[in-house]
Image (cartoon, rainbow, N blue to C red; front, side):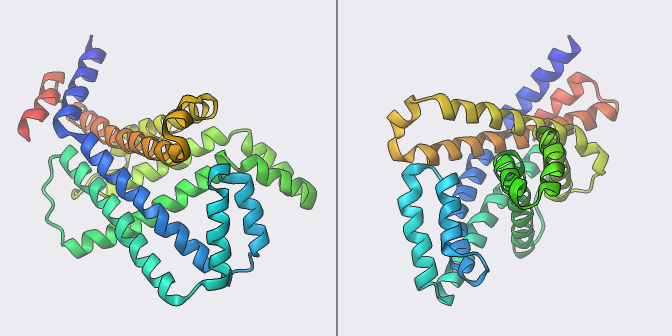
Length: 284
């Protein structure tokens, strides 16, 4: 009975805090940041050792076929027409959109913990940009491990068999590795983002919940996306974009749910009863 009462208490507070609105807003702006991010990467890539042919081969393997012609055109343009002005504009757009997405998460976590924001607007933006960079790098790392891991391993089987043997062992536990990495990331974000001081160990329960939730939802959603034909019938060429938006929204929602769990556990460990933890919703 206590377990179900705890679930009811957390659910009531989730509804009261309207975390769905914060999840939707952050997902929207993070999606918006993908476009300037891709443009920026394509403009910068010509200054790296990566050749146009190598990038195009990678795109053909990874990008959905409906987007390959458009991606190919932009990559070709990036190698022929890239200039500093476009790089600067894309960089500013990326920083603004992605930063705005994390500002929404900051507002969401402050709402969860019933905290008023008094930090300077400029400082918040700097934090948001820093968190965005950390977030994108780690999420990209998880995608590489979970989605592209075996393709990378196939490459090393020919070029470097020793490395391939190590990767085989790592990829056998890729789900656990992704959960571990995400747990560390979410613990850091739960500590750093809200306008409050807290201990790292107090954020572990929600971080673990969010990491498992992200990994599990992503796995089942990828299966649904792979085997469901109705999505493409409804959304046509926009299917991939719609699916990414839906995936990111649910993931942001799970992340904020993890914060609600952390708050409940904190109240419970402090000696609050289920009723007292439930009454948190009336203090807002």
